[in-house]
Length: 451
Length: 162
Image 1 (cartoon, each protein chain N blue to C red):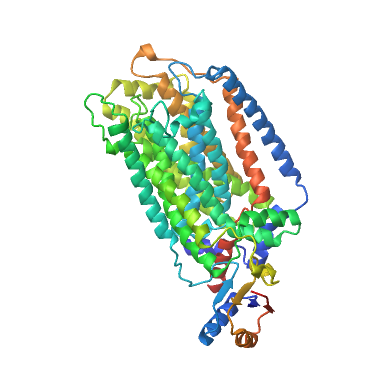
Image 2 (image 1 turned 30 degrees about the vertical axis):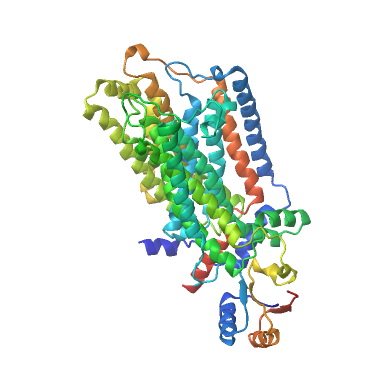
């Protein structure tokens, strides 16, 4: 069966050669015409980003009372969006590190898009905790730096673990991305016609010439880094899960949380990769390299990760009743029939029920259906974060501490701003960096020619 | 230094085989992708391992110091050296140090960044990053190397100053 589908959908178009593939991929950043779709997309994302910056400045000026955060729901949109973004970011690392280690052939051409997506999403995740501090100019207090107050960070707190995890993840993702990009920047340097582009790419290629020595060290370094990135990405999202599991709030305090959050990262991250692949393979003219095969694999992975989510939700519903704790039962019932019941049921519909359509082969053949499932995943995971972060805090143990949460316009403006930041970073990188790992494609094409 | 450019990888492999047999060299290849069957021998993985272990040790030491010596904070008789709660931070710090050290070590062993190298003067080098497979022969026995290279009919032979 696997062999049949592989021959039905080749992993790369049979007419593609090492040279033609290189020309096709490097033509995208070197194309000197202006693309209308690109400018329109940049205008939209830039506008969102502009208003997001205004929103952030306003929040700095008046403080976090600009947001809907109010007792008892002190973790509002910023934490929701932080968790949502870091989950999406993780998806790129799953593709680039995990599937590198298991040597699947379909990872090669989508790896760069996935990793670039990771960088853009991690940037959005990274700014939220700083905004949420309220006094962002004290962000450096999280570092264990020598200070006259002899203060230390609270090493036992999951929130500090989270800072350490996020900091490591952002730095490691950038370096891992750059290491794999270096040979391709060398290609861009040699393909570029204008002096400016030659100097720019030459500078960032750092003198990579494809010598035997350089390849030898690159392969060794890249392999080991991938082997480190894979457990890192699992640890990052597990620690995000511990942020919640470490609190005694009903609905959070569960050993299920770290794997539950990793499943969610896989699901929303793969959906974002799939969506970007579907949109950009035609726009960038690389449909011969990112073929139907990749889309079919991604569709099946989406279905798998959706089933993992369903398992987590079933456990989430089972626990309150099995534990026999009144507070957990009240908490869970308020989710499914409380004022935000539509959030819970929307989450179930988009993360568990709708993706089942991918069980049907005819549905998997439709790119529109796959795109809708992916969008559903991204929205559904947002609803899940709302469900976890806000609704847990609305119904804690004693009715005296119950409350309601409503986001303000500034919550939405800043959230829109991070959507703009994500799209802006991605669109800019798209125009300067090759969006397919060319040197790994050359190895793939060699293997194809030999078989 | 003599350079031979081939349009096909297997022809470069054949040339390498012949040149190694003749014992000319030292040889260096310049290729669009890693050559097949080349062993990935490199000191970088060991450097990454050592850096990671050092990072882990330093992180554990710092956390232990801050709780037991610098700022002991007894709460309900709980242990100051609560190593289990240090584990996530130890892991994250170890990974950070390992990845950064790996990246720096990769540049260091290759003596990068090196934006100019005499070999850049060769026209053959313009092809390398697309679809050109180049062998460069250094050393004194240039005439012998050239003779062997000519029998292999490369697409381009170039001689440049070292």
